Image (tube, rainbow, N blue to C red):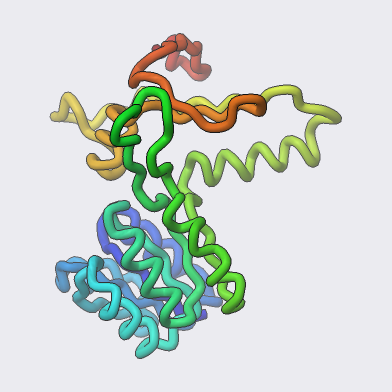
Length: 230
């Protein structure tokens, strides 16, 4: 398999270490705005890896790179602001696509606490027909939540329980980064967006709607010594 990874930061570097142990990876190219960082990420793969410089906002450059590398798949490991340029570039190049985020959301211009504007992933899902027509696969939002938690939920439904009435996903940790009072473990822009955008809710009778940020707080008692978190 020939893979292009766009983004050679912490996630890209972790991908390199795993890919180096996988024999099915024929070639893996890391592309980043910082050439030296891309080359460092590729180093664990030896002759199977390479690092190149690219502007992740340049859709045409991304398509050209994927075509030149004859990539089977592109893994988007960048900030979510670059999702759509990479997504469209992959579509144009005929390359399958993976990402851990989704296209960004935008609140409703006039009624942000009552109605949805553009939801996370809406821009990508709007192009689903084109991907299907071309026989290309795009797996989006496959990070920890909702991606990995969705896999766990489906496994539980298929193999662990005869029936499930409700399934809740909570995200909490007692992680400490020495020397920092605040150190997010993923994109700071995503952290800000998740905190400041209005919560999006779907109900069978009502459909999609929003509430004010931080409304309806819940205290959940996490296991493994983490304890209650609001």
